[in-house]
Amino acid sequence: KKKLPEEQDFILGLYSNIDFHAQWLSDPINYADNNHGIMMDMALLQIALFYPFLDKADFYYQTAIDRISERYREDVTELGVHKENSPGYHPFVMELLEVVFNMLRNYDKQPPQDLQDIFSGMKNYLVYVTKPNGYWPIIGDTQHGQYKFAQVKVPTPEIEWVMSQGSKGAKPDKTVYYPDAGYVIVRDKWYPGDDFEKSMFLDFTCGYTTSVLKHGDMLS
Image (cartoon, rainbow, N blue to C red):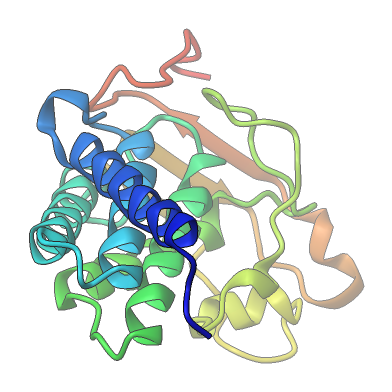
């Protein structure tokens, strides 16, 4: 069906507005150096993938990938802990990255290996920071709530142990220390089965690498 002139004008105007939006997102002046920046890059990446005929689509794509990689290198410690001083943000930024991976794979593009490595390293912290009752410790901007480990598409053996309450997988360590994030997390024991929630749990925080979302809860 041949498009009417007014339909063509509308479509061209729509593409022009999308491109203008992408230009704004790609401009470093407008960029946010935090998880909000990741969401900006996700939008920019979507535009590049959905509208590859735009003149600067390749530039938008590479800008988004480069900035996402930089964000996760800067915002996640070498031991795999998100730096924004709030355990509840850790799975949130993991989920953002998983959406990025899915977008790329839907267009037959392989996610950068450095991002895949960071994502794998972040899984470990989930095991230990979640309290025996499944809730988060209320540190920083973390809200009261539970984490559903079923959200982890490819669990580690330790995550499998937690998800199954000890019926499969590998029992995690009782004590973990994240010196580059300022956390020590201690349990008296990992109890299996119906006794799973009976563990004593201590999450001690001291030190931080950024003031983002940092509250006055040091040494708590």
